[in-house]
Image (cartoon, rainbow, N blue to C red; front, side, top):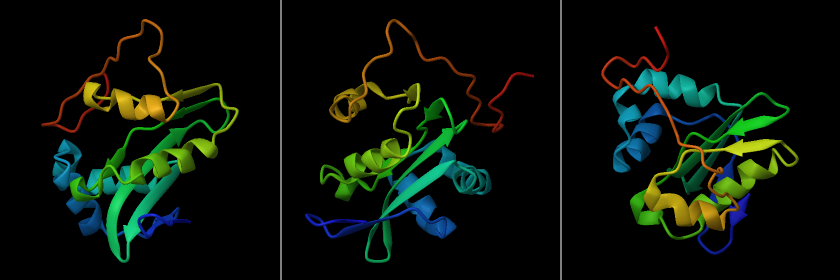
Length: 145
């Protein structure tokens, strides 16, 4: 898979070095970079994982978690800041969503600054729903005790 405009190559393999993943997450200031082993395990155990490469440099990544039948959730989409606005994120989303055509729900959480991007990718606000979470970055615990 290649994007002709930018010479970016897209892969669906899981052969990605942890240091490349951490560089991408740190460049985007994502807190999951502070938990490298857990981040790596989470990505490698995703239902789908698409990466974008400029030669041998990881420049983008997106993943999906799914039950395989009805629902798919897209938790991570990152592109190195200097590669943003070149269609890489859109290509990753298109590659991911095409794998789940016909699914009942495609779900993601979007920061307000990313609403426009995701609308262009076909997503819309989910009625009157509000996102909710239990987020404890200092412990890594994301569930109910």
